[in-house]
Length: 213
DNA sequence: GTACAGATAAACT
DNA sequence: GTTTATCTGTACA
Image 1 (cartoon, rainbow, N blue to C red):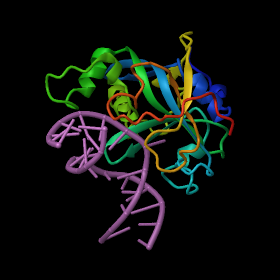
Image 2: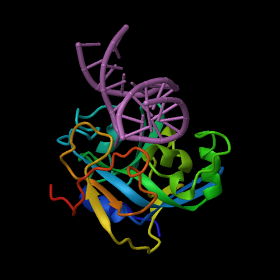
Image 3: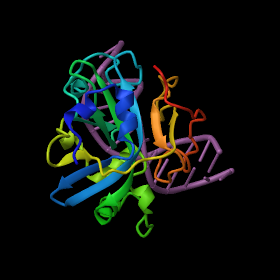
């Protein structure tokens, strides 16, 4: 069942925690891909220096100020698309960055989209297809065209398949230079599809319970 | 284990 | 015109 707008119209940390275990689905002309969300980060308000809303309203970050339940997609480092879910009421800029999925449907299509990322012949394990926000967007076929997409619409949405997650962990967010004092990254502990652990050794030390802002 | 290229939009001077 | 940015794969020691 697709999550309703009310799901996103709540405190961002609540939405982040509740998104873990939900299933992100993208229907395109190429086919449908879907995966269970295993890692997210919260970006909350103009007072959060790592949030794109920190400089105030701009044409780029305008979706953050809009209605909850819409997509905020942007190009990072000129190369990677990053997919965010807008949360909280209009006028309150906040979002959840989806960082990693455990692939469920359309694994062949994901692998085809990722082909060329690596040397030809090197097979990508399932749990690496959507590990990391840039890889996730590529495997799911998410691009700037999906910016401002309504997640309560028919093609890009999050659904609840009734799966529950144990072992939720919180840590500092990855890849940012400011705002590292907030432990607003939420992930499934021990899940191989979660980014940050293996390749680059930048797993944040702090691992704890849900933070109280 | 660390270093670095890659390639672009948007904010800033 | 310049700088930066929610990153990833590859190349090295």
